[in-house]
Image (cartoon, rainbow, N blue to C red; front, side):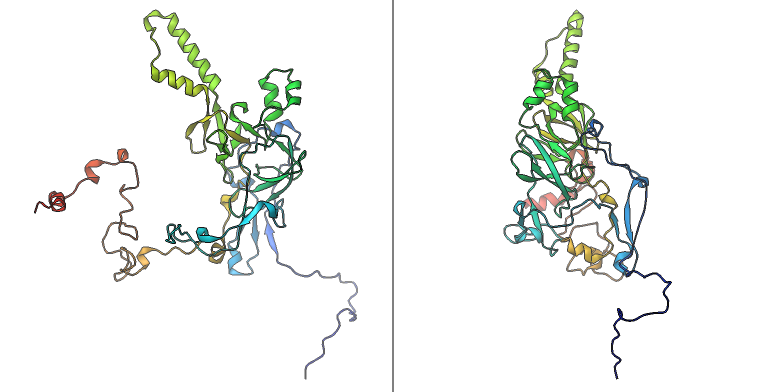
Length: 401
């Protein structure tokens, strides 16, 4: 006979001195390390954001108690400042169609190992930020379509909301502005009606502000950099990426003028400028030189947009998924080695044991994938090795048997 369930609230125990034991939840371990307090938005020292940390000493990673096998190796960067609710519905639209399965417009698989995944809503991001005036950051949100975080900002004059890519260190309550439409009148009056580079940089080059490249001081870290005037940012948009302003057009033009004056003083070296040098001077006068994290230097038009700071979520590369099922949630299907397939499925498949049949590395369609074959430009390949072929191969193709 089953025993009746006792009412725990009415049950009195003799152990009155014992404290009440809280309910045991899903415990986790957090690495507690010293954190630098965030600077207020009005502090001018926050204008030039420091580069992201490259060592593990200042990284905050959350580890979980291994109550299940999928949680044992799970590692996530601590982002407790993110919004816990749903996104702004009017700024999103559902992601449907062939985009989630790697298919093109004819239904053929063009990108392998994609399919399934959780339902998503694409967030519409304002990469250009042409609306002037101060914008209040209401919250920082997670975006499943990108590695960096996004910020929901509200225009204090028009009360319109929009999403922008958040800078590292940006929090709810900060005020950011955009100077893409020009310098406001109050800033003109504070400078006395003329452009003062020092005052302009101190008032505008703050973290999270969007400026044209010609208004950004040399040495500033930027992200969300545009490639064409009037178009949104396209470079340095992923988590933790940034570029550095190296030189401006006016500095390069001044160096060219000094060089021309030195040549005029020396009559022996006095030569007229060629058309190529003249075009180069004109290009340097209207472009800004920036250096990417890869070390590449690029010339960007001075009217292109850029945001001060470093893209948010710089510790994204420390993330560990922990289990295969979480990859399926992220729209990633398994990748099977060709060596483990049958001979009819892959050129490396088949055979007895671990062997690819004594053939060169090939793709599933039989195209060589290494040794420089169609993987590098022709000027980087040793033509004597790549183009070596039997003598009769060309004759057979042309019908000279």
